[in-house]
Length: 484
Image (tube, rainbow, N blue to C red; front, side, top):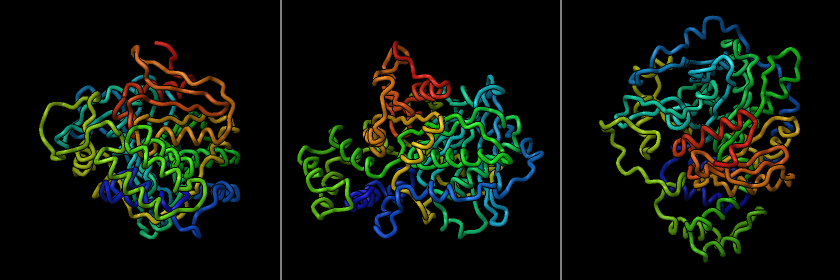
């Protein structure tokens, strides 16, 4: 975000909703840290720096025997009838620093030998792809209210792909570094380079996937992670002596990709969804300059007013209930059709169990969904130049949103894509599932913009069946069904 009033907005969000302990709050904490005009990174500095680097991976070793060692026999409390293989473990990305990234990998129950390979990255920065992505959204299991047992997610993405959940960067979830100073040097570039090193080593560990079609997906601040990793892969693929990764496409949901348009989209979302008054919205546009690096005390005052008008709601899903009682409790098996707003507490309890960590082949860890230990060293104001490079390379690019997320709303994504001034190939229209509108989609030249209707920031948590159809369409390279 490019003006001081919005940095104040981020700070107030943290005060209003509590300490930075989830991926959207971590995002706003990062934005607050970028308020210094002297330290703000230039929009295109990241790709410029990457283009000057030597892309020989710093660390690739033989991985013989590691795949078998990483295989998970069963997770404690998992339901009967599990019909797919699952793996968990570490891949070292820097032996000198002792830096290793934890992954959880689930193969498809059917067609695992031909289904594509998908990498999932959560945002923050600093939040767990395992705790959020795998255990709360698109993985094969969800955690029951007792915090000890699991139930099956029938709309898991491993129904259509073999999925890697990567806890990145080191310091997130079970991932770690034995060199604590690493955390003070973490940023976009180091995260992309470590994720790339993870991938080439992981493919040595699972060589049967070396020639498989590969896709990168994620949400929130993964609007940075995903395009940057894809860009890094394409540059490395140009080196004939390196592992060629068959990158086919990227899909990012509720993606933070451009500070300026995200700011405007957030303010407009508040008003268009009746979360603040006409007077406040009018004053926002009168006193807050979202295009230039200026602010005013009047603009800062409006932030307090907007928060008061919005009230105590879940800004991830503005129509969803909030967690009133996070106490663990025995009860009936959960349902993927009724997302529990206290799920974060169940997941943290489950992943903190010693037997669970042992089954995952994880180091004993005081696990938490997000960390605030990083001093994020680089975060460009926009990722749109990288996205344009990916489009021009022929990489499939989808930007999609749960349409009732207020943190990184669909309005922000629309403004970001519109700033590219792309020709429209298929006009905006509804897509359908089970005789109902599942969302909306417009296909531009080089990028597809879509929504999942009735979904929040964690779209598969709230609309698992619609989210599965969306990602299945993306993997097939087709638009979702345009008729019932």
